[in-house]
Image (tube, rainbow, N blue to C red; front, top):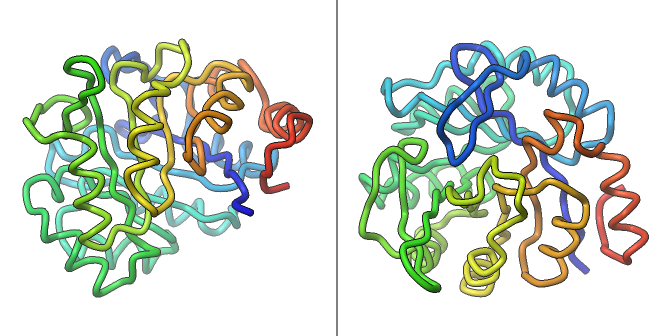
Length: 252
């Protein structure tokens, strides 16, 4: 039986952890290594570090942060934002990252995921998909931290990145991100049922009840949490205890 995962998502701008609503209005909420270590000590299953402005500035500046993190944190670490080529992936994996999350570069060049997965293995490649609802049961792909729109259907794109060799999908609901109103359950259900690789959901959680509903109503295998942890709306331990009490199979 699949064990559901609880992941912390740490979005970074200029060395600070930031948080906004619908990927806008970003404000500082802490220091990345301090928060990552706190979540690790509290029992987080994995950590995602995202450079929130990397694609805009055409760079990834998280190497120093990741180098420090991998010396203190011993759970899988994913790094995303500004990953443009094979050298970027190689650099991050060499300093200790376990996986990389790719969005903008894949949208601009779909064969990038195929090439990366062949070189490093699918287990290292996470396809990061930013989704915005256009009309009923239809979502389009966005990139560059929600700043750039495409006419690519999210479900079609999820199937395509799986075909190209992505090992996981990180789906972020732009509409729900930072709102603390719960997940976009329809989006997550549609994506998770359209592919066979693990899907990680991000955007909207404010309580363990939101997470329970997501796991009970979709095939999503993991949640990437930000506001709920950053603003102490709930603790990792409390979330896990609630899920266990409701017979959700999770990592302990």
